[in-house]
Image 1 (tube, rainbow, N blue to C red):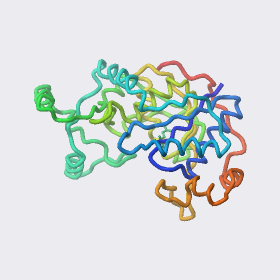
Image 2: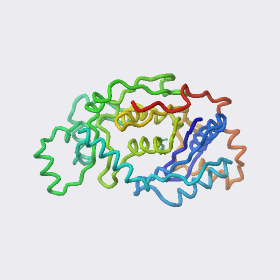
Image 3: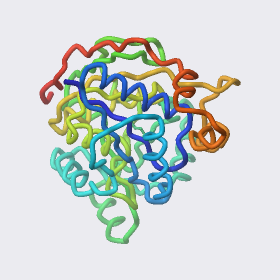
Image 4: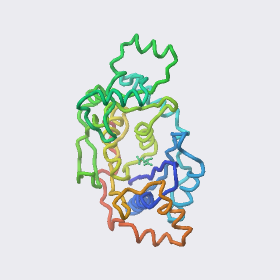
Length: 299
Ligand code: GLU
């Protein structure tokens, strides 16, 4: 049985792009007599708002989707993320990073040929090179810090990894893909103000919820490379992935949460029906089944 999910962040109203992602995940689960879950990714307390969370449920119900209760909210899962961090810490794979965004940008600008990652230049590794004494002194002076993964060390420990892709990556990749976990550099796994960050929370919760197939847009394709590494380090099962094409507006741009005209609420209030939304979206006619219907064992 496949278990898949739609995992929005309540930072704005859902738009047509979200409707597409949610319907694809829902229909894929139904086609396989599997389970469709909704997960609220609300670890960023500064950007997430309760009214957007309520709107997510309202919009998804209006689209005719159904999902089991209770819905997992990541803001309630900090103890689980803390435990995952402790495990990575015990493996000697985390280090505190005291850099401000500004310091990182300056450092990147100084490096003549900074490599480019999926989210711009990866972190230049400044705090990875601090001595134990320098670290202690900064911590003792109460400087706030994030926790970063020493990704090269982590990748060496995990060895070669692969993931299964049922959809289509941005370069047309499908099938069994060799993970390239170094893509993002030393990612942040816990922020100064929150003991978690996207990649860690997503991996921990996909495993906790028994997700066997991660359905999402191919703007998050690169994330699978580093998420696969985290699964291996944490001894978690590896789900398959189905990254779908993004729905673009008439100018060929990704929809934005800031563009009210394409929000589901606005469309509903202007008399558009859920059936018309489905007709408007290029939904697949069939859904391929994953190679494995159960998640692979821990790496
Ligand atoms: N919360 C993410 C978003 O709103 C999706 C994360 C995922 O599907 O892994 O884009």
